[in-house]
Length: 601
Image (tube, rainbow, N blue to C red; front, side, top):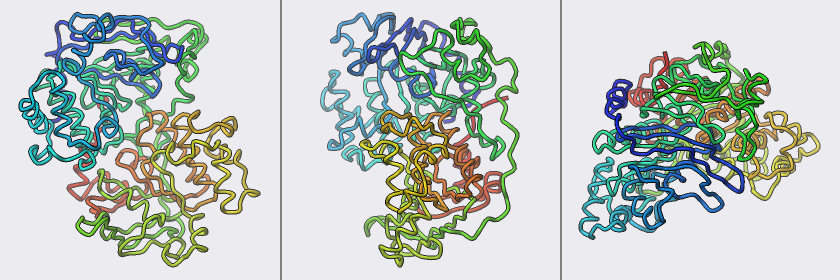
């Protein structure tokens, strides 16, 4: 099932009536500072309400406060949370436990963190029913029913499998099944599709819509992905610095945002139907941390249109009913959110390829099918090669093989004409200067004990280049202020950490960067900054790029040539313009269909 605009319009007609959840004036303090500041929203039976905003805007704290699950150091200081007419904040904890899990289900972002790795999945589902009074036989039957309900094939066979035997999308389905175990009236889903590939993301979103249609369950969907909103939500509320700044039906908000922050989020999203290569609109700065809010509009320091009134007085809410916003200078013309003019992508052939992979085959165990089979790729300075495919298609295995981090069973990887196998220990260091890696998770790839200065100096020392390059110069190259040099990773934002990881990879002047899903878990505005940075680095330094991603819009925006991987094989290879205009393989067409952009006029 696909949640089209028509589907949402018909669904919206069924969500009128008394509110199921009514939040008024909710305030949450975190570490002594106010992180959620007077939030109001309503969810009606059968409605999917999207709560959108960057990391740090207060979305997750709001959801946890609704469910009385705030972490240590956080507390609700004001407001009411009425569920079916009863204020949950006024109930004693035993009464809240009777509601939580039974009438309100919660789906968390990382299924591996919330599934017991040692317990069969079926038993975990049965346990969710057992704790709310079901008998063992009834709980097992309910677990099998739930596995079928969320689309897990062969429920009886998969009942005894453990979480590591499921794919990422299947684990997310299990979490949804667990939340639905007691037929809740409200489902709170916190970033349930982050880092999933397009087809799996569509499956999860369509599953939520189907569950809503079949069971009448209302959904509070928390996300930073506006594509998620376009596909599944009836109504959207945009959150910034702990406040709701805009509310509207999903179709209206995507077609004509009124708040400058909402318009900025939409303008920073790469689109399959937009001009490739155009610089993405970036919201400068960062959201204020808890306690940093200014006396005026919290977005004013990042807003290009801000005037004196924006910094001195807080905007009042304008609008009534389903739509409204709080902005002194609302967007009034459609062209405010239009794309910048297309930048002509360089089409001339660059130098000879530096990185060449020929007929790579990689196996993990004799009985398993190959992770890669017969894959070839070449990357030259100044060119960007995109590698796309679903989770499990072999993208990360290819990245590791390109960097010589694993040895293929057959085939070769050559860097400047020399293979990793024949380079030996002495030659390997020189090859690593030419090809560097940017990993998906910058927090995991940076030592928490090192300052940024130390992290940037380490590769320079290893390659004997400390006297030729200064860490401050590398910060300038990737747009970081010198002030971060003495900070450790936990003090940096996600975008800053990724910039440090890129600067570290650039420290030894490589000719090619291999970037493995470098923006998959970043906010829209931070993602736009990183994409613009990659494009700028190609122009200024001539570095080549192998850009591995499951997001087709990013690949179309950034890359010259594209490889499509499926089950470890290349099923299509073409220049980006040709592949996205007329994909030849059915699988590529499926991926493009799953990655349909948000609706706009």
